[in-house]
Amino acid sequence: MTEMGTVRMPMEVKREIEDASKELGIPQSQVVALSMKELKKKIFFQRVAEDFQRMRADSEASRSYDEEAATWDTTLADGPA
Image (cartoon, rainbow, N blue to C red; front, side, top):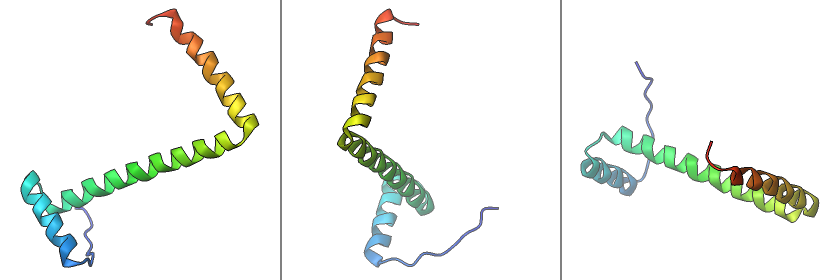
């Protein structure tokens, strides 16, 4: 059995979860789980973008990345596998 816990939140947020649950036809716990999955995805891509910006700020790393990307681009020209 899945371990359960309690989370205190403003009633406005609770009502939003209830509304989403009714609209989607899924349990409130699943609304929260889906929301957390989307938040984790957003954080992941935000970190990727930040890392890419840091890499672009380093001229040597940026040049190296561009060279490797160009190498891979030429492999795509051979046609489908």
